[in-house]
Image (cartoon, rainbow, N blue to C red; front, side, top):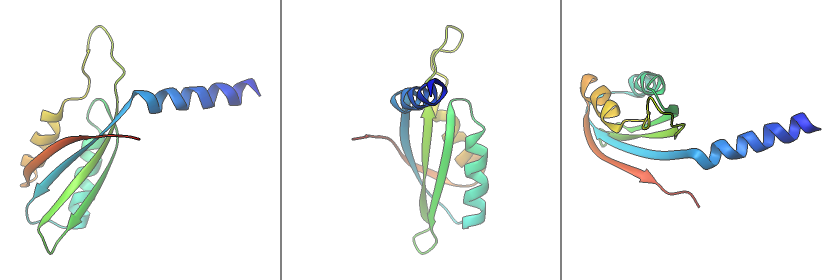
Length: 104
């Protein structure tokens, strides 16, 4: 019972520390490439998970980025949006808008 309670408390604390972002983009690509880019983004420091969406009829999409902000003395800001932008540009996509998503 204690172990289950510990897991629940730990999970709740991770949700409180997590931040969610959206980064929209334009460019000619396909869903497979968007999934591959999402995997690349997941490997960045401070990123917990990424979900990509793409609408081929509009040549536009977005990445939903889920982060955790575990700060320490050596790296007070582990998540850097500029790294997301760099990955988009490397994959021939044009970044449009980066925004923090609010949770209710």
